[in-house]
Structure formats: C-alpha cells, structure tokens
Image (cartoon, rainbow, N blue to C red; front, side, top):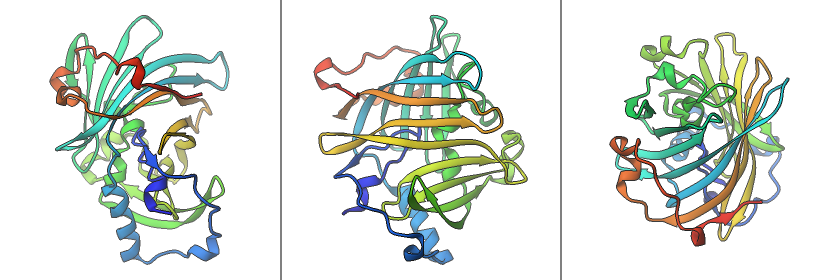
Length: 282
C-alpha cells in the first residue's frame, strides 16, 4: 500500500486529504525499531515535503467542550491549497456573537499568519498566534498552523504507540529568537505513523517536559478515492477543556482563484463552492 494513503497533513492542521483504502493492521513496535539519526532526518524531511492533494474546501464546526459548563458550536469554513510560499489555509468562523473571524495561515519553513481586525488585515505575531481564536475555544492559530513541524532543532525521541499504531515521536525545539514569544511553550512533540508517515498527534511541552496542550486526529472519512479528516480534538491539558474540530462537508479537486490565499483579500467575504460540488460528512 503506497505511503500516500495516510499522509494526512493535518496543518489544522488540518488538511489531511489522502487517497486509497483504509490502512492494514499496524506492525508491532518490536518489528519497527528506532532508526538512526540519518534515517530519522530523512523520514522527517519526507513528511515535510509531502504535498496536499489539490485544492479543497471544508465546512466544519468547532465544538467547545469545557470540563464544566455547556458545550457550544461555532460553524466555520476553510479553503486549502498551495502557494509559491507554501501550504495555505483561509479560515472563517462565526464567533457566536454575530461576527465572523477570518484568518489566513501559511505553513512551511517561512510560516506567516494574518487576521482581520476592525475590517483591516493585520499580520499575526507569534505571541498573538498562541491566543484562542475567540473566548471559550481551545484552538489557536498556532494550533492550526503547527509551525513547530519546521523548526530545525528536531530529534527522534522514541517509538510510541498512538491509537494502537506504532509512531515515531519527534521533539522540536524553537529557534532562540522565538523562545520568548512562545511563553510557557518550550518544545513540541509530534507523532508520525511509522507505516504511512502521517501525523497522528502533537503535544506542546513546558520546560519540564509536561504536556500543556495536545492535538489528536480522531477519525477520517472516505470521499470518493480520498480520505478526509472527520474529527480532531484540541485539548488543554492543564484545564482539561477541549474543542473538537468536526468536518461536516467537503469539496475536493477545486481550482481556486489565487486571491483566496492573498493576504490583501482576506477581509473580502468568499462564497463557498456550488452545492453540487459539496459532499456532506455524516
């Protein structure tokens, strides 16, 4: 089975669009073995270079699930694709008070982010990207963007089992110039499926290695010849509050105008693809 089957690059994270059948039974950890430094670097580089399978559109809900209190739903839309600068995502979310938040996230070695504030497009600083998109939601622009996947200081820590599947656990440490802006975040850990080189889970760590926040891809849904993310959880491991990212509709193999991923156009509302192109996700 080709490696593209589970190459779910959830840069919302997010955007793991994958082709093929469901994965076969995973091998045992003892059968995998921990690769040496050179092979570990090759595996990580292969993961970083894996591209998205075309341009696409998602409709989703953020389900805020506090440990105490009522759950709330925040509907949203996402357009994904590639630009000459790297993978890009445009996100719109209704904030529960009648407004709509808009963000543009660009991933890669030179990641960048923008948001709309009072009708104006402004760059999002690294420190600001760690703030919740809006109160009550345990998701930040940093969570969706996952820039740590491109930090140069990356080492293979160990082999681990995630959701029953053997995974490589990589630890990423930030560049010295970014450390202060990250606040309590001192490092990040990402788990890549050993069989399909797919991102399964991430963790943000403090300076003592304790988990501050985690992301986990929960399920995929087959749509035609591709698999799309269906559910993912973002959990605050300090408060134990979490927000579920749940996809409700998808349109694949689109040809989106370049302006969709242009920062200057972020304040302009977008129309979704025509209804005939959208597939509901139950």
